[in-house]
Amino acid sequence: MAMVRVGLIGFGLSGRIFHAPFVMNDAEMDLVCVCTSQAEDVTAFAPEARVVSTAEAVFQADDIDLVVITTPNVLHFDQAKQALENGKHVLLEKPSVTSVNEIETLCTLAKQKGLVFCVYQNRRFDGDFLRLKALIAGGELGELKQLDSRFDRFRPLPQVRWREEPGVGAGIFWDLGPHLLDQMLCLFGKPDWVQASIDTLREGGQTADTFEVELGYGDKRIRLGHSSFEASGTRRFNARFTKGSWQCVGLDPQEEALRAGQMPWEKTFPSRAAEQSNKRFVLQNSGAVEMTQEEPTQGSYIEFYKQLRDAILCEKTVHKKQAPVSMSDVCQLVYGLCLAEESAKSGQRLPWNYVANI
Image (tube, rainbow, N blue to C red; front, side, top):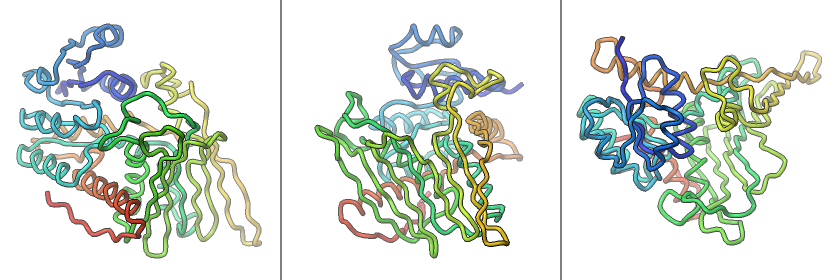
């Protein structure tokens, strides 16, 4: 059986929670190597994986096919470039990079070398997003007109961590913005225009902690946002259609279950997390609106890794398969994030004018 041999760079929250468990869960993937200073943590979790102290040791290893990069954002471009130059497929944590030139450089290099380059936009596989996607496609509620997509938290005080230190790509917009914007690009493609505000409202804050982004799609309006002051929980989606609406409260449970130590190979995964609350409101022939409490849709980050694995194993065959996130998509996403920042700085609504040069 063909295997994808994986080298993981970084064993912090992202590497330990979002990546290592899914590599180990896949029968056609092998976690061969981990670059980290936390050798004891790796040994306890994946005793057969060897631990190395430098990223270069992963790039240059003969027994690595795929490099998964989960380091701080500022290292992403150089590390992804080195991995590709050494003939490795790459999965890069979001945000991938912070400039259009950098993302186009990585995508062009991957194409030239015939390698898979993908960004970890795992929330395409959240259950709530999959349900919303099905509602839009099915037409049960008519045509979508307005959508609020939020990822709020209650963190009124700044924390001591690299994501909240000043620097390129730091702050909550570059942390959560890639998830929210990628989902909309996945659903609707490129918008006509973007208008954004990105602010620092917490006392003593050094990076953005609040944002609101509006996207214009013809006769549709999409609003994306985050507040660090929402104590009542997140209304993840509020979708308004011509024949009703749909609301989702709470977050997809996969992350919370992983943080609680529940692994994706456990039959009850992700039961160690609170369920979401989904409500559907449908206009009846009588003119009344009927409310239905839905069972939450199960998401699957396992599927992300399955699609990535298949894309790598089929890369050099006539039966090529697509990575879960295309290189064209990741270019559009970086452009959109940069455009939103530009809109926030100028206070203006800006047109979306971009064709990826890859």
